[in-house]
Length: 470
Image 1 (tube, rainbow, N blue to C red):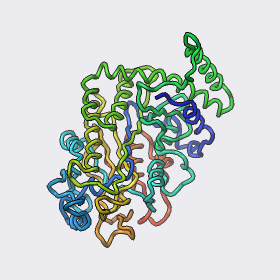
Image 2: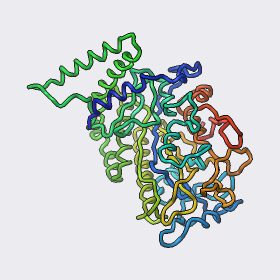
Image 3: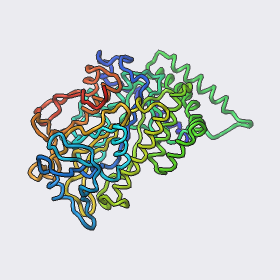
Image 4: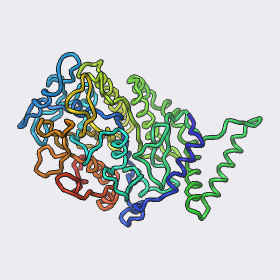
């Protein structure tokens, strides 16, 4: 569908009305950091993915993780227990030494891990003072701002990178949705919200003069935006400059649909064979990447966001059975990611694309009848040809004595804790520094450290996790 005039004006003006002080920081200079010819795709598992059944212990190793898991995840009717035989081995837990396995629904992701070494499994991701509210926790993950630091309030973690790197005339980001993703929110450049390229277009009205008047309307919009862009008043200049960019992109992006279908028929069919929304959304990303790779004028997006919903599994979650809700969700995402990766390989772009997968929280260890309640720590994934595949971070401490009053694993930054949490901002910062090309000082400005007890808060950021190949 076409973007509405109301949504376009909101998107064009929202950022121009207030500019956070972050972007005047001398260490955050525009054009000093650039992703170059790479791409970043962010995939959100909306609803709180059950991380404890996404990566589960196969054995105890040097601790009691499997015993703790078996003690809370039941077997039989309604049971969520994944047996060691069902789990797909990915390596050992760095903290406990336990063997770890993926949910069987993620078999296609496991194939990418085994065949390509292209998946990093990052365990125990969370943040201090964690929230179990979908809305609050989603916002925290989108902004990278768990404790409400005013210096970065109101902006997305990736949006801050876009604002520090691109100007108002650029459109470096696309959300595959009908609204803008919070991770890309910022105030200095434009982002497109596109559900399907073939339906995207500039929001002209539906009233046409005899013989058509789109050309006249286009010329009028262009004149208005050009005049506003030349205005000395910063807000009008931003609206005009971004308006011209949006007008041009609304003409440049839709033809990518036919280009892709014509020139990549076999790959197009592979997405159809998966037949799920995530595959269709990733195909839209692939169309844009292909357009950039082919040098299509006016198509320059490097950052993408999409989501897959349904992970609020309070009931009917299932274990390893193929008809279970969690299995179906995992299979959709994994099958879609595998087709996407193979498409990128065929384009020659797999080594220049990184996919980051996250969810707003995990699920509780003790199952709730045949489902799970909201939890704390969960895994993240990175997928790509230059990703250093393997297991990173420690499995959450799920032993009874270590759980909080609600039965969830506790966030810890204690250096000697074998279950030390992975703060999700370390993952973001590593991506910004080692994939997007930002400096250490720039990333520190984007993701400022916490104050407080260093065992309980993120006071010593690590933006050099070995998540990428040298």
